[in-house]
Image (cartoon, rainbow, N blue to C red; front, side, top):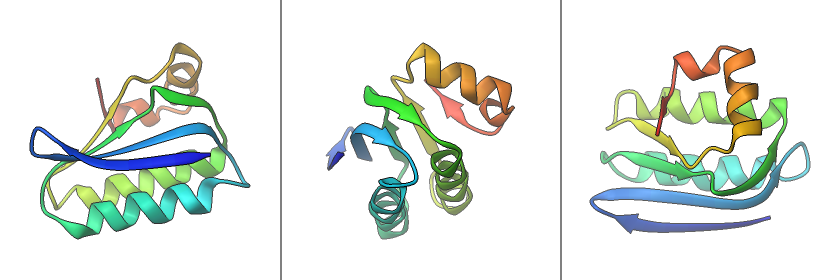
Length: 99
């Protein structure tokens, strides 16, 4: 997995590529939490390069969302159909801003 972090339109963007599973979730969560806590602006997770998420990844996304609720918000973008289905089945889509 690779993870890029950059600024775009006043938002911090975290862009992981590959699978977010029990092996890679710690790296993803650490980078995203670091970005989430670094500023008060909105955090965007660009999921364009993510092909798979495990339940551990869902927990990490919810944790990041909780951190950002008070500090600008969290947006998920470019979520593929397979991952979107997982978010819907688990009802997590109801708690997230997905674009």
